[in-house]
Image: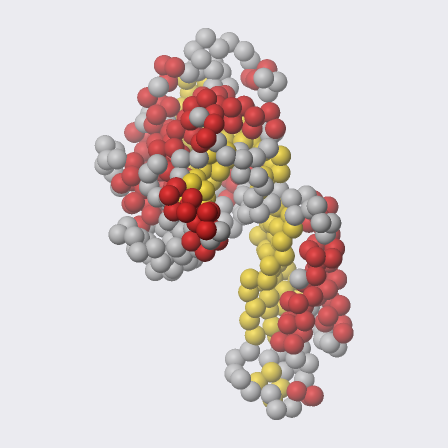
Length: 411
Protein backbone atom coordinates (compact mmCIF):
# COMPACT_ATOMS: atom_id res chain seq x y z
CA UNK A 1 0.00 0.00 0.00
CA UNK A 2 1.68 3.20 -1.17
CA UNK A 3 -0.94 5.92 -0.55
CA UNK A 4 0.75 7.69 2.37
CA UNK A 5 -2.20 10.06 2.75
CA UNK A 6 -4.68 7.21 3.28
CA UNK A 7 -6.17 6.78 6.77
CA UNK A 8 -4.35 4.41 9.10
CA UNK A 9 -7.45 2.20 9.19
CA UNK A 10 -7.03 1.53 5.46
CA UNK A 11 -3.43 0.51 6.05
CA UNK A 12 -4.58 -1.84 8.78
CA UNK A 13 -7.20 -3.45 6.52
CA UNK A 14 -4.55 -3.92 3.84
CA UNK A 15 -2.19 -5.62 6.30
CA UNK A 16 -4.99 -7.83 7.56
CA UNK A 17 -5.82 -8.98 4.03
CA UNK A 18 -2.21 -9.97 3.35
CA UNK A 19 -0.85 -12.01 6.28
CA UNK A 20 2.62 -13.54 6.03
CA UNK A 21 4.24 -16.30 8.12
CA UNK A 22 7.42 -16.07 10.18
CA UNK A 23 10.49 -14.92 8.22
CA UNK A 24 8.35 -14.43 5.09
CA UNK A 25 7.01 -10.98 6.02
CA UNK A 26 8.52 -9.32 2.93
CA UNK A 27 5.39 -7.41 1.88
CA UNK A 28 4.67 -6.22 5.41
CA UNK A 29 8.30 -5.22 5.88
CA UNK A 30 8.21 -3.29 2.61
CA UNK A 31 5.14 -1.37 3.75
CA UNK A 32 6.78 -0.52 7.08
CA UNK A 33 10.04 0.58 5.42
CA UNK A 34 8.26 2.82 2.94
CA UNK A 35 6.17 4.45 5.65
CA UNK A 36 9.20 5.07 7.85
CA UNK A 37 11.10 6.70 4.98
CA UNK A 38 8.11 8.90 4.24
CA UNK A 39 8.15 10.04 7.89
CA UNK A 40 11.86 10.92 7.73
CA UNK A 41 13.47 7.92 9.43
CA UNK A 42 16.78 6.34 8.52
CA UNK A 43 15.71 2.84 7.47
CA UNK A 44 17.64 -0.41 7.68
CA UNK A 45 16.02 -3.42 6.04
CA UNK A 46 16.60 -7.18 6.21
CA UNK A 47 17.82 -7.17 9.80
CA UNK A 48 17.32 -10.72 10.98
CA UNK A 49 16.17 -11.75 7.47
CA UNK A 50 12.94 -9.73 7.19
CA UNK A 51 13.15 -7.25 10.06
CA UNK A 52 12.98 -3.49 9.51
CA UNK A 53 14.37 -0.77 11.76
CA UNK A 54 13.84 2.96 11.51
CA UNK A 55 15.93 5.50 13.42
CA UNK A 56 14.95 9.11 14.06
CA UNK A 57 17.72 11.15 15.70
CA UNK A 58 16.52 14.36 17.30
CA UNK A 59 19.28 15.81 19.42
CA UNK A 60 20.57 14.84 22.83
CA UNK A 61 18.48 12.62 25.05
CA UNK A 62 17.44 9.04 25.74
CA UNK A 63 17.06 6.40 23.06
CA UNK A 64 13.63 4.75 23.03
CA UNK A 65 12.95 1.56 21.07
CA UNK A 66 9.34 0.89 20.04
CA UNK A 67 8.70 -2.63 18.82
CA UNK A 68 5.98 -4.30 16.74
CA UNK A 69 5.92 -7.90 15.48
CA UNK A 70 4.79 -8.68 11.92
CA UNK A 71 4.13 -12.40 11.42
CA UNK A 72 0.76 -14.13 11.06
CA UNK A 73 -0.45 -17.62 11.96
CA UNK A 74 -1.43 -20.75 10.00
CA UNK A 75 -5.11 -20.33 10.91
CA UNK A 76 -8.07 -20.28 8.51
CA UNK A 77 -9.90 -17.01 9.12
CA UNK A 78 -13.59 -17.27 10.06
CA UNK A 79 -14.39 -13.67 10.99
CA UNK A 80 -16.66 -12.85 8.06
CA UNK A 81 -14.97 -9.46 7.67
CA UNK A 82 -15.01 -7.76 4.29
CA UNK A 83 -11.25 -7.31 4.70
CA UNK A 84 -10.58 -10.91 5.75
CA UNK A 85 -7.37 -12.69 4.81
CA UNK A 86 -6.88 -13.39 1.13
CA UNK A 87 -4.27 -16.06 1.91
CA UNK A 88 -5.75 -19.52 2.32
CA UNK A 89 -4.98 -21.04 5.72
CA UNK A 90 -3.21 -17.92 7.02
CA UNK A 91 -4.50 -15.01 9.09
CA UNK A 92 -3.50 -12.35 11.57
CA UNK A 93 -5.05 -14.28 14.44
CA UNK A 94 -2.82 -12.63 17.04
CA UNK A 95 -3.22 -8.98 16.08
CA UNK A 96 0.27 -8.32 14.77
CA UNK A 97 -1.33 -6.27 11.99
CA UNK A 98 -2.66 -3.96 14.72
CA UNK A 99 0.84 -3.73 16.17
CA UNK A 100 2.39 -2.82 12.81
CA UNK A 101 -0.24 -0.23 11.91
CA UNK A 102 -0.11 1.38 15.36
CA UNK A 103 3.69 1.65 15.30
CA UNK A 104 3.63 3.17 11.82
CA UNK A 105 1.15 5.76 13.08
CA UNK A 106 3.15 6.44 16.26
CA UNK A 107 6.44 6.74 14.38
CA UNK A 108 4.91 9.31 12.05
CA UNK A 109 3.39 11.34 14.90
CA UNK A 110 6.68 11.40 16.80
CA UNK A 111 8.38 12.64 13.64
CA UNK A 112 5.76 15.35 13.18
CA UNK A 113 6.17 16.54 16.79
CA UNK A 114 9.94 16.36 17.04
CA UNK A 115 10.03 20.02 18.07
CA UNK A 116 8.51 18.92 21.40
CA UNK A 117 11.04 16.27 22.44
CA UNK A 118 14.71 15.41 22.35
CA UNK A 119 16.45 12.07 21.93
CA UNK A 120 16.34 9.15 19.51
CA UNK A 121 13.41 6.98 18.49
CA UNK A 122 13.92 3.49 17.08
CA UNK A 123 10.89 1.92 15.38
CA UNK A 124 11.54 -1.82 15.11
CA UNK A 125 9.37 -4.19 13.07
CA UNK A 126 10.28 -7.71 14.12
CA UNK A 127 9.76 -10.96 12.22
CA UNK A 128 8.92 -14.38 13.59
CA UNK A 129 7.56 -13.67 17.06
CA UNK A 130 5.26 -16.67 16.80
CA UNK A 131 8.17 -19.04 16.29
CA UNK A 132 10.04 -17.50 19.21
CA UNK A 133 13.26 -16.73 17.36
CA UNK A 134 12.64 -13.42 15.58
CA UNK A 135 14.10 -11.16 18.26
CA UNK A 136 17.18 -13.32 18.72
CA UNK A 137 17.72 -13.50 14.97
CA UNK A 138 17.77 -9.70 14.80
CA UNK A 139 20.26 -9.57 17.70
CA UNK A 140 22.44 -12.21 16.05
CA UNK A 141 22.38 -10.17 12.83
CA UNK A 142 24.05 -7.26 14.65
CA UNK A 143 20.97 -5.16 15.46
CA UNK A 144 22.75 -3.09 18.11
CA UNK A 145 25.71 -2.54 15.83
CA UNK A 146 23.37 -1.02 13.26
CA UNK A 147 21.28 1.18 15.60
CA UNK A 148 21.96 2.99 18.89
CA UNK A 149 21.65 0.98 22.08
CA UNK A 150 18.24 1.78 23.58
CA UNK A 151 17.69 3.10 27.09
CA UNK A 152 14.27 1.45 27.21
CA UNK A 153 12.29 -1.05 25.10
CA UNK A 154 8.55 -0.41 24.79
CA UNK A 155 5.74 -2.28 23.08
CA UNK A 156 2.17 -3.50 23.26
CA UNK A 157 0.03 -6.53 22.51
CA UNK A 158 -3.60 -6.31 21.48
CA UNK A 159 -5.93 -8.73 23.25
CA UNK A 160 -9.57 -9.46 24.19
CA UNK A 161 -9.92 -6.58 26.66
CA UNK A 162 -12.27 -3.65 26.00
CA UNK A 163 -11.01 -1.45 23.18
CA UNK A 164 -9.57 1.79 24.51
CA UNK A 165 -7.96 0.36 27.64
CA UNK A 166 -4.24 -0.17 28.17
CA UNK A 167 -2.10 -1.35 31.06
CA UNK A 168 1.18 -3.03 31.96
CA UNK A 169 1.85 -5.60 34.68
CA UNK A 170 5.05 -5.17 36.68
CA UNK A 171 7.44 -8.11 37.06
CA UNK A 172 6.90 -11.45 35.29
CA UNK A 173 4.17 -10.41 32.85
CA UNK A 174 4.19 -13.06 30.10
CA UNK A 175 4.97 -16.70 30.76
CA UNK A 176 8.09 -18.49 29.67
CA UNK A 177 7.26 -21.30 27.25
CA UNK A 178 8.70 -24.45 25.77
CA UNK A 179 7.35 -26.32 22.77
CA UNK A 180 8.20 -30.02 23.03
CA UNK A 181 7.82 -32.72 20.36
CA UNK A 182 7.72 -36.30 21.63
CA UNK A 183 7.89 -39.49 19.58
CA UNK A 184 7.21 -42.82 21.24
CA UNK A 185 8.15 -46.08 19.54
CA UNK A 186 6.34 -49.36 19.62
CA UNK A 187 6.14 -52.48 17.48
CA UNK A 188 3.46 -52.41 14.83
CA UNK A 189 1.24 -55.20 13.65
CA UNK A 190 -2.26 -56.31 12.83
CA UNK A 191 -5.06 -54.82 14.89
CA UNK A 192 -6.50 -58.31 15.40
CA UNK A 193 -3.32 -59.51 17.15
CA UNK A 194 -2.35 -56.78 19.64
CA UNK A 195 -0.46 -59.34 21.74
CA UNK A 196 2.26 -59.41 19.08
CA UNK A 197 2.77 -55.66 19.24
CA UNK A 198 3.81 -52.83 21.52
CA UNK A 199 1.00 -50.35 20.94
CA UNK A 200 2.38 -46.77 20.81
CA UNK A 201 -1.16 -45.32 20.79
CA UNK A 202 -1.95 -46.82 24.19
CA UNK A 203 1.46 -45.62 25.37
CA UNK A 204 0.77 -42.10 24.10
CA UNK A 205 -2.66 -42.09 25.75
CA UNK A 206 -1.12 -43.06 29.08
CA UNK A 207 1.42 -40.27 28.76
CA UNK A 208 -1.30 -37.70 27.99
CA UNK A 209 -3.28 -38.66 31.09
CA UNK A 210 -0.25 -38.77 33.36
CA UNK A 211 1.00 -35.37 32.16
CA UNK A 212 -2.16 -33.81 33.58
CA UNK A 213 -0.95 -34.62 37.09
CA UNK A 214 2.16 -32.43 36.84
CA UNK A 215 0.48 -29.10 37.51
CA UNK A 216 -1.99 -30.64 39.96
CA UNK A 217 0.55 -32.61 41.99
CA UNK A 218 4.07 -31.31 41.32
CA UNK A 219 3.62 -27.53 41.14
CA UNK A 220 2.85 -25.56 44.30
CA UNK A 221 -0.71 -24.16 44.42
CA UNK A 222 0.54 -20.57 44.62
CA UNK A 223 2.50 -20.98 41.36
CA UNK A 224 1.00 -20.72 37.88
CA UNK A 225 1.83 -23.29 35.23
CA UNK A 226 0.31 -24.92 32.16
CA UNK A 227 1.04 -28.23 30.44
CA UNK A 228 -1.03 -28.72 27.29
CA UNK A 229 -0.92 -31.51 24.73
CA UNK A 230 -1.98 -29.69 21.59
CA UNK A 231 -1.16 -32.37 19.03
CA UNK A 232 -1.29 -36.16 18.91
CA UNK A 233 -0.97 -38.29 15.80
CA UNK A 234 -0.51 -41.96 14.99
CA UNK A 235 -1.58 -44.63 12.55
CA UNK A 236 -2.84 -44.88 9.00
CA UNK A 237 -5.67 -47.45 9.10
CA UNK A 238 -8.20 -48.77 11.59
CA UNK A 239 -6.86 -52.32 11.68
CA UNK A 240 -3.15 -51.49 11.83
CA UNK A 241 -1.25 -50.86 15.04
CA UNK A 242 1.49 -48.40 14.05
CA UNK A 243 5.16 -48.35 14.98
CA UNK A 244 5.14 -44.80 16.36
CA UNK A 245 2.98 -42.08 17.86
CA UNK A 246 3.84 -38.41 18.27
CA UNK A 247 2.72 -35.72 20.68
CA UNK A 248 3.18 -31.95 20.68
CA UNK A 249 3.29 -30.15 24.03
CA UNK A 250 3.42 -26.58 25.21
CA UNK A 251 4.65 -25.69 28.70
CA UNK A 252 4.10 -22.32 30.40
CA UNK A 253 5.53 -21.03 33.69
CA UNK A 254 6.40 -17.69 35.28
CA UNK A 255 9.63 -18.75 37.01
CA UNK A 256 12.66 -20.72 35.93
CA UNK A 257 12.55 -23.21 38.86
CA UNK A 258 8.96 -24.12 38.03
CA UNK A 259 9.76 -24.49 34.33
CA UNK A 260 12.69 -26.79 35.12
CA UNK A 261 10.56 -28.88 37.47
CA UNK A 262 7.87 -29.31 34.82
CA UNK A 263 10.34 -30.31 32.11
CA UNK A 264 12.02 -32.82 34.42
CA UNK A 265 8.61 -34.30 35.24
CA UNK A 266 7.69 -34.56 31.55
CA UNK A 267 10.90 -36.42 30.74
CA UNK A 268 10.44 -38.73 33.73
CA UNK A 269 6.84 -39.55 32.79
CA UNK A 270 7.54 -40.09 29.09
CA UNK A 271 10.52 -42.36 29.71
CA UNK A 272 8.78 -44.14 32.58
CA UNK A 273 5.64 -44.92 30.59
CA UNK A 274 7.77 -46.17 27.70
CA UNK A 275 9.71 -48.45 30.05
CA UNK A 276 6.51 -49.81 31.62
CA UNK A 277 5.18 -50.57 28.13
CA UNK A 278 8.35 -52.39 27.14
CA UNK A 279 8.91 -49.81 24.42
CA UNK A 280 12.22 -48.44 23.14
CA UNK A 281 13.63 -45.15 24.42
CA UNK A 282 11.39 -42.27 23.25
CA UNK A 283 12.61 -39.17 21.42
CA UNK A 284 12.11 -35.82 23.19
CA UNK A 285 12.84 -32.77 21.07
CA UNK A 286 12.75 -29.18 22.36
CA UNK A 287 11.53 -26.82 19.64
CA UNK A 288 10.40 -23.26 20.32
CA UNK A 289 11.43 -21.59 23.56
CA UNK A 290 10.43 -18.25 25.07
CA UNK A 291 11.97 -16.79 28.23
CA UNK A 292 9.75 -15.34 30.94
CA UNK A 293 8.97 -11.76 29.92
CA UNK A 294 9.66 -9.44 32.86
CA UNK A 295 8.51 -5.83 32.92
CA UNK A 296 10.79 -3.40 34.75
CA UNK A 297 9.07 -2.23 37.96
CA UNK A 298 10.09 1.43 37.81
CA UNK A 299 9.52 1.63 34.08
CA UNK A 300 6.08 0.06 34.39
CA UNK A 301 5.09 2.53 37.11
CA UNK A 302 6.31 5.43 34.98
CA UNK A 303 4.49 4.24 31.88
CA UNK A 304 1.21 3.42 33.63
CA UNK A 305 1.31 6.85 35.28
CA UNK A 306 1.72 8.47 31.86
CA UNK A 307 -1.24 6.44 30.58
CA UNK A 308 -3.41 7.58 33.50
CA UNK A 309 -2.47 11.20 32.93
CA UNK A 310 -3.26 10.95 29.22
CA UNK A 311 -6.29 8.66 29.17
CA UNK A 312 -7.77 8.75 32.68
CA UNK A 313 -7.81 6.12 35.41
CA UNK A 314 -10.77 4.25 33.90
CA UNK A 315 -8.80 3.51 30.72
CA UNK A 316 -5.82 1.92 32.49
CA UNK A 317 -6.34 -1.71 33.48
CA UNK A 318 -4.35 -4.02 35.71
CA UNK A 319 -3.98 -6.97 33.31
CA UNK A 320 -2.17 -9.33 35.68
CA UNK A 321 0.26 -11.91 34.37
CA UNK A 322 -0.53 -13.41 30.95
CA UNK A 323 -0.02 -17.12 30.30
CA UNK A 324 0.85 -16.39 26.67
CA UNK A 325 4.48 -15.86 25.71
CA UNK A 326 6.54 -13.16 23.99
CA UNK A 327 10.14 -12.78 22.81
CA UNK A 328 10.31 -8.97 23.06
CA UNK A 329 12.24 -9.32 26.32
CA UNK A 330 15.22 -10.62 24.34
CA UNK A 331 15.58 -7.18 22.72
CA UNK A 332 15.70 -5.53 26.14
CA UNK A 333 18.01 -8.10 27.70
CA UNK A 334 20.53 -7.78 24.87
CA UNK A 335 20.62 -4.01 25.41
CA UNK A 336 20.61 -4.35 29.22
CA UNK A 337 17.69 -1.93 29.13
CA UNK A 338 14.37 -1.95 31.03
CA UNK A 339 11.33 -3.39 29.28
CA UNK A 340 7.75 -2.15 29.48
CA UNK A 341 5.23 -4.15 27.47
CA UNK A 342 1.52 -3.52 27.94
CA UNK A 343 -1.85 -4.92 26.95
CA UNK A 344 -3.96 -2.99 24.43
CA UNK A 345 -7.68 -3.73 24.45
CA UNK A 346 -9.21 -4.64 21.11
CA UNK A 347 -12.66 -6.05 21.88
CA UNK A 348 -15.94 -4.22 21.34
CA UNK A 349 -16.54 -2.67 24.77
CA UNK A 350 -20.32 -3.21 24.79
CA UNK A 351 -19.94 -6.86 23.75
CA UNK A 352 -17.22 -7.37 26.34
CA UNK A 353 -19.26 -5.87 29.18
CA UNK A 354 -22.35 -7.89 28.25
CA UNK A 355 -20.32 -11.10 28.13
CA UNK A 356 -18.64 -10.27 31.44
CA UNK A 357 -22.05 -9.73 33.07
CA UNK A 358 -23.32 -13.01 31.64
CA UNK A 359 -20.17 -14.93 32.57
CA UNK A 360 -19.59 -15.85 28.92
CA UNK A 361 -16.32 -14.09 28.14
CA UNK A 362 -14.59 -17.32 27.13
CA UNK A 363 -17.25 -18.17 24.55
CA UNK A 364 -18.44 -14.77 23.38
CA UNK A 365 -15.20 -12.75 23.12
CA UNK A 366 -12.70 -14.48 20.80
CA UNK A 367 -9.14 -14.52 22.06
CA UNK A 368 -5.80 -14.46 20.29
CA UNK A 369 -5.08 -17.39 17.96
CA UNK A 370 -8.80 -17.99 17.40
CA UNK A 371 -10.08 -18.03 13.78
CA UNK A 372 -12.69 -15.53 14.99
CA UNK A 373 -10.20 -13.07 16.55
CA UNK A 374 -10.73 -9.63 15.03
CA UNK A 375 -10.00 -6.48 17.06
CA UNK A 376 -12.39 -3.67 16.23
CA UNK A 377 -10.57 -1.02 14.23
CA UNK A 378 -11.56 1.95 16.37
CA UNK A 379 -10.84 2.94 19.03
CA UNK A 380 -8.21 0.16 19.03
CA UNK A 381 -5.90 1.72 16.44
CA UNK A 382 -6.20 5.27 17.77
CA UNK A 383 -5.47 4.15 21.31
CA UNK A 384 -2.62 1.94 20.10
CA UNK A 385 -0.97 4.91 18.39
CA UNK A 386 -1.60 7.18 21.36
CA UNK A 387 -0.24 4.62 23.84
CA UNK A 388 3.03 4.23 21.96
CA UNK A 389 3.46 7.98 21.67
CA UNK A 390 2.56 8.64 25.32
CA UNK A 391 4.90 5.89 26.52
CA UNK A 392 7.75 7.12 24.33
CA UNK A 393 7.25 10.70 25.48
CA UNK A 394 7.37 9.51 29.11
CA UNK A 395 11.01 8.59 28.43
CA UNK A 396 12.06 11.07 25.77
CA UNK A 397 13.26 14.40 27.08
CA UNK A 398 12.03 17.91 26.32
CA UNK A 399 14.27 19.96 24.06
CA UNK A 400 16.17 21.34 27.06
CA UNK A 401 17.39 17.88 28.16
CA UNK A 402 21.16 17.84 28.74
CA UNK A 403 21.76 14.71 30.84
CA UNK A 404 24.02 11.95 29.65
CA UNK A 405 22.78 8.53 28.63
CA UNK A 406 24.03 6.74 31.73
CA UNK A 407 21.99 8.97 34.02
CA UNK A 408 18.61 8.17 32.47
CA UNK A 409 18.54 4.67 33.94
CA UNK A 410 18.35 6.08 37.47
CA UNK A 411 15.37 8.35 36.79
